[in-house]
Length: 516
Image (cartoon, rainbow, N blue to C red; front, top):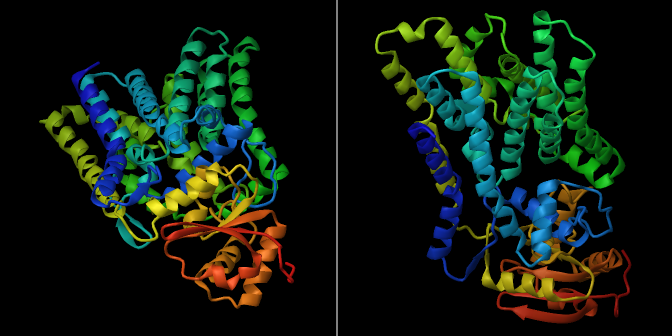
């Protein structure tokens, strides 16, 4: 390993643990609180993963625990299944997820390193491309504020999104394996298996791989005559990569929870904002498109950004969602193409080109990396109502619910509802609004009225009786609730368990006159 590669690996690893370090620092500053293990600036995604891990530990396949009614256990994701097995052995879900961080960081780095080394010649070019692929960032406008888009920053993906990093690594490894098998004019199962892994972990990467392979093969048709034997490799690779994608399509249509979650996740993001940030890479990268690619890997590198653009546009329509997922990892092909484009126009002949190139790389890596880290530092602070850090009383209450062997769902405010499935293995009435569907925000408002005491006793009792009919057994009052449930719904309370400022109420229809 070259010295610059080792340096970039160490920096990438240090950046990846930045949020964890901030979380631990906050716990050192604020006694009496418990870190819920969310390794992200937005904990809701990690709580969703934790719920999947907990569900997998119970049934292997994952069901939606963010609703009270039974849902089918039909979601398979390989990394979640492994984490679920660890949790079944006693490892907490947050830790079984966090263990993927070093794996994801390592495989992503070495996949990017191999990709750069296979497509570029010369240490300066390789060092520049690897640094830009890992840390590129520039200015753009995001929802009215000036700053970078975190989704395109691999270090950001290392903050709680290991599956995206793993899928990116699997996609790149599939391209490299495909290129080797293609050069030997043989068939190999490895590219397809790696493609299937990418599709299972993060379907956007599987779709990108299919588009990149198809685009590259079409570009390379002019260089050789295609025989039936030569079709075996692309057909095998594309078929294996597509199997998990077909599964996701079926899942979204057959499972109501997945269908509703896909609808709830639909949003738009301005393409011009993405293009503006990528401009420092896009301009020199466009120069590389003046020449026809001579190798499959060169053609795939050219096809990748075009595939990402098509997938981004498709994600903004009724056929997709979350468009920014399409550009995760796009700095890798654009960095390579930018180096090739500048080399083709004679940048290497410029006086002090090495110094100028180094300064340009530093300009578009160091400032934005520090800006992202400063943003993480501002966001990772203790706040009342932030479920990244809950009180010890709330933790004890959740632990009680996890240990109680009796079945039954939990009703609590969203603040703790997001945590209930992962920390207790129980279903919750409202939590993550992607999954507590339909009418998540209406549920949230009803629960808030109950726990804040703004409902009348009659209305509160009708609501709780309805929840009991939906298999709810416990109400969890967090430390910020002020509804005095012991008086508001007294006829429905079977037992009461206090844990400091948090309380667990067991409820039932005993004495209730109202129905849902």
